[in-house]
Image 1: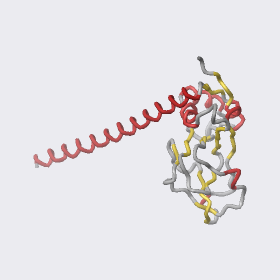
Image 2: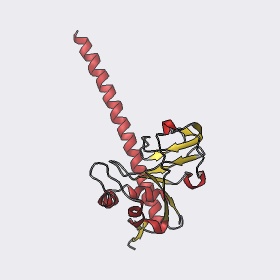
Image 3: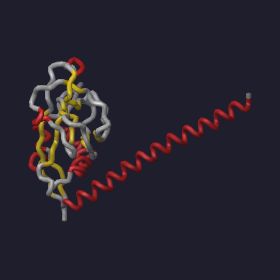
Image 4: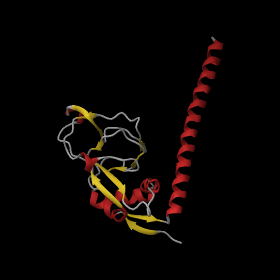
Length: 196
């Protein structure tokens, strides 16, 4: 059975981050953690991430991050989605990040959505909507209209699991390459010292 294509807004809620008037460093310290573009988060965010903590009196409930949310980088050189694995509460997000929260979990698996948003095919569609020559920006309206393939939920979960295993394999391969390089350099260095 072929996948149907659905607009992102039909199956997920998209919310813009809080637009701070100044740098987070200029905000008074407090208890509210903030995720911003300044952190290099990679593909996921978890409790171990060191986030700035500020005194925030805005609408925390509207900006609250929950496990399973996605954060989308709407501005800059990369438009990759970040999966929120876990966060210490309260935790909010700053503009230009966009929170994507699945509204129909019976129809859309969050891990699958994370994978599909980061595929080259969907990234090409996202980049086609980006505006600006120096700093690229994707509007929240463009994201809402983004068409994504939505196979049956069982197929989504299978795809998400295979994607997870591929990421894990890539991380292990990268670690092995680094270890091999380190050992080879140690052997070569030891051999070079024998000559002296």
